[in-house]
Image 1 (tube, rainbow, N blue to C red):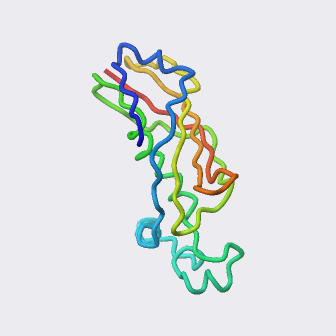
Image 2 (image 1 turned 120 degrees about the vertical axis):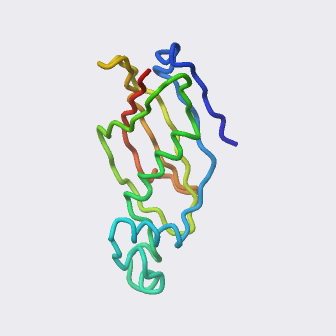
Length: 154
């Protein structure tokens, strides 16, 4: 079970260097892949045609879009960390993203987060640079690695 780290804004700098652990496992379903395909208008057969993907793809079946896997960072980050006493929370961006290995439909993924840096930013806020690693259950290789930037303002 995921343990959420809750930190008051006044103590946000204490997060620097902290490993926040792992989220719970989350299953990637064909329905979720299809919904994502509709949202981003990417209906490539390797994602949305299970029978064809089983027969023709090098992965033995349909896989999730890389950006679908990456988009779970928003959910997973919220599961792992809450900064209390802020007026605004912003996903500020990404410094680096690598899609290391595919995520098969039906696979379960989880994310680890390590707060690499906490820096003060203009406008009475702080920015967290967080290293995320998305794991696929039963796989030695991660699915996605990224450094995400989050901003918190009071």
